[in-house]
Length: 153
Image (tube, rainbow, N blue to C red; front, side, top):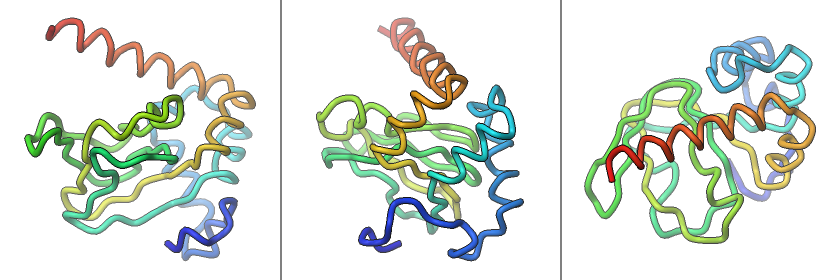
């Protein structure tokens, strides 16, 4: 998608049926605590994006201003050219770049065709204030990652 497009878009304008997009959002574990109105608010601010097999979704070392939820498909996480993890539908990534200006710490590459739900920095920050269940799920997921890292250190 052209980055010059407006950030708030109609998913139907890109060939997405609204009901299908809402079902993607409802299937994302991070959004299970959200009610229908909250998921609708997320849908209004989010951008669905199709990713081709083998395409980099984010690249290590680059500056980021987007948060991603893997709605369908799978992805690989690599650091320094070494694969360190696999992501399944429902996984989220990119949030650190929205809190800290440091470069991306990993490359995420699609393994087969994938669909991601993208929130740009401004929409992401607005939603954290407007949708408490999203904020709480994000914080729980980040805490879980820290606990996992502590266990491997």
